Length: 271
Image (cartoon, rainbow, N blue to C red; front, side, top):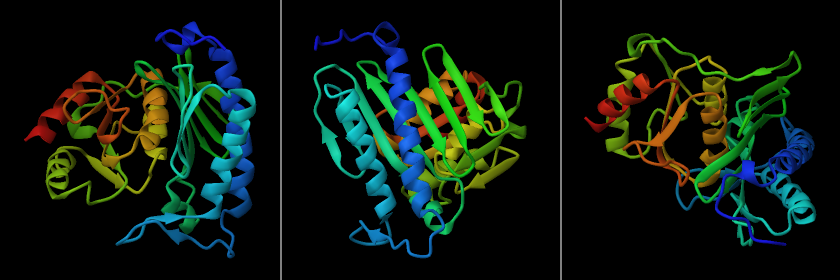
């Protein structure tokens, strides 16, 4: 198989990538719903201290996605949360989080999601956020920005014209990263109208849907953020790290609906 040049995937095989991503998401729905809200689901703890849960649903979901990639895209690389990296030769990497929001999953709350992203030489190139329980699928990439749900399909578009004082901000944990990160986050939270917690990847989907205006997080891994970056950017939003640089490697991430909100929030984060 020839090695792809470091171009965006629109120059390669976007249609095939979208078909493969849909197949992964369909298979992931079966595995995640098999265990969701089951009284038999028992988590393991990955953390040496504290609680970082992983379940058989996480592992089974990633295994089935990897099996599909091995059949359909054997020369692409893979980076998954549960089974780590697998090298490839095409310049494309599938970045998989089988259940983003395992804590929510354990609680029976439908704010978790399956994250399927693709990176190329320039970073996040394509992304899919799938919420199996609600049946919502958010997709973003070159020329692609849509949500498909039981109510129908429509184009994604961020909300515009909202001032910082009227904005809605989301994050997953009240303690955002380390103590300094939390202090910086509070400066933004104090400047907006409404702050909500605990939505994991679903927060980025809501931003792309035009329901909220800012998502600010810290301590992320690539598999947490590659798919959300592609979805938010395709909807017209901005995703960077807290210094305005690329965010696809994870760490401290801010997603904003508009350049104005992005700039104002960055200023507050910097102190």
